[in-house]
Each structure stands twice: as structure tokens, then as C-alpha cells.
Length: 263
Image (cartoon, rainbow, N blue to C red; front, side):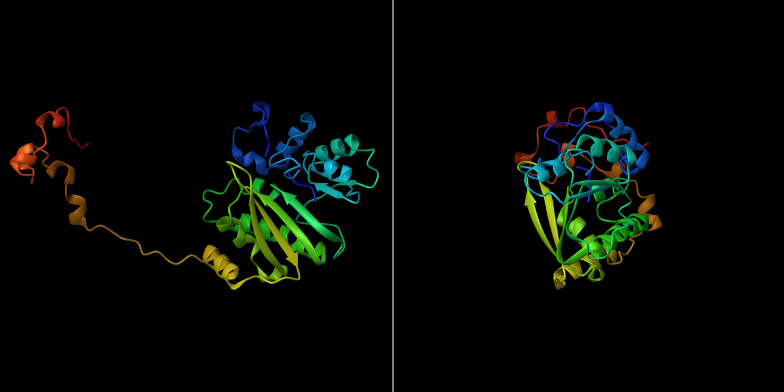
């Protein structure tokens, strides 16, 4: 399964969008793939290596010859298929991850690398996920689960830390277990492995429940009298008003220029 592939080098300024929400738009990727040759978002294959990441080609050279790559960008698929035309048993298909056209149980391994990250860039907080994004991820994960064979593995490589990402994967309807590994040096990435036919731990279920059903927080209101108080004007910072003894008083020079005002 094709995925947006950290780069060991910085992303070229010519491809940086003015708004990060562009990363979730097909039009952005079409434009970018038309001009960009390759770009690795995470680590290379030696650490890991479809978008236009060289991951698939490196895996092919390493002996994994039966690889199917998908992306919803026609520009990406066209360029990558042409570039790797010599790899005869590797295929490139334009496809939406929410509507896979493969038969049930067709794959031993499904790999995504940054795909879900790209579609979550518009989220305002990592602690909550909008209904739209949650539904998008659910559609993708249901399809991934469907095309995995019994005992097959879904590998998801992400910037997202486990307390933000595990709840999205921890749904019994997918029928898999979850294992998390961390890699990287100064900046860490996370490697989530889901095994079809496995089961979630109760801790993972509880984590997902708390994430999607956070406890209600009581609102605390200030009384009118609290609003009427001008606390700043009532603060007396003169040395003579200090509770310190004469021997403990701060030098008056430390207060020079200090003023409190309210608008």
C-alpha cells in the first residue's frame, strides 16, 4: 500500500504549502508529484524506506518482488510506474485507501507511512479528533483489515505518539492486536504493528474509550462580585507594606520603574 514517505534533509521550500491543510488535498499532491522526483518523509529503507518515497524500489531490490503500490494521486502513480518500469512484478495503481478494490484476505502485509498523518493535519488538537477525520480513518482501517489475510500484518509508521494514535487503531471491529515500537535518534517516529486475528488488551480498549469519550469537565464560573474586583489596583508593592521584617526588606531600588496598570 503506497504511503507518503522523514526526510534526512529538509523539505524543499518550493513544495511547502502556505496552509498545512493542503497536505490533506489530492490537488496538492498531484501538483507536487508532477515536479518532485523522490522525497523521504521518515527514514530511508536502511532505517525504513508509496508516495514518491524510494521504499518500494528498495524493498524490491532487497528481494520483495510482489509489491502493490497505491496512491490517489494519478501524477504519483504515473511517474513512479514509469520510473520503475524495469521492476516487472511490482504494480502501481491509482486508488483511494477508503475504497480498496482488492479481494478479502489478499495481502500478507499492508504498509502505510504518513498517509493518516497527512489527513490529520487540520486537527486543532492532538487530544481530540473531529468526527470527519475519525470517520475517514475508520474507513481506511476497515478496508485494511478486510484485505489482510489471517495472521497478516498492518504496519503504520507515524509521527504520532501512542497516546494519540493507538486509540484510532484500538477497535475490536478490526480484529487485530497492536504493538508499538519507537525509532529515531533525536526526533522519534513510531512503528505500529497490527496482527490480523490478534486481540486488543483491556488497557488499549480503555485508552480508546477515554480518548473518544473524555470525562465531562465542570465549568467554573466567577461570581459578579469577583468580576467587579480590581485585583491589580489593590496590590500594594511598596516596601513599607511588605510582611517582611525591616532586616528582610528588599532594597527599594528593586522596585524602581515597577508599575501596574489596567486598561
